[in-house]
Length: 355
Image (cartoon, rainbow, N blue to C red; front, side, top):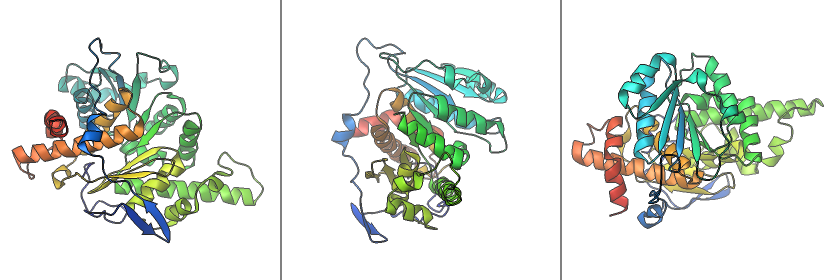
């Protein structure tokens, strides 16, 4: 596994097979799935710091995470971001979570998320790469988080990773529209759902498109007018299925939201808006523990902050996450691995792919 959900947590997505072919056929459509990347390919992506690097050139990672109910999610994601190489890791969390996050790692910069102003953030510039991860430890009961997410999707110019509770908040007409507007503006977005979250994203996209088509049939123009016409027949068919196969679902979500999608599970599928899909099958059931998805989000976010493009960041992050799970299990047994251990064993994961 790559993202912290159990093999049975599919939420309407067919259970992902432990083995796969590089070509599958679904509903009469051929779907090419590229094999997982080799160690040699992954090694070339590792963001080794330059000799004259400083904390800013190594990447500024902003994490908007950690509600009062779930401060641990921010702790895990932030620690993973630091360990994965981000030079400056800043956490915006609920006021009640700040003491917990500060006490977790004193090297973190921690602020109340009321101070998060994505529209006022400096635009990406040479020598100061940056990225944002939003959603780890979001509490659906906090209604203010919807506006926090939507403003970030609308205004944040640098690469953006959306994870956890923020994915449910994105799964509606407004979220679909803003995600597609980001894509049209050339702003990179990466979604990291597990099976249940992917099913909600599909349902949100389907309902938004149905509303847009109904409005068009009555002569009413709307912000999503014509979106359905831009989706492939295979993508529309997949969104309409009750339990689509994961590779096809990842591709359909990438197409609909205009984002790279890493659909986590026993086998993880990474899809791009251009229709390409690749697999990551290094996972282990040792990763089926709460919090491991937060670690993955922090790792990938750090790679985005170090200038990797979203697809490469997802491929390298997922592979290192899986290898960290394997090396942790070798030391601790597959029973005893916890999310915190993945941060500890990340250096061993890097050594495993770059001996």
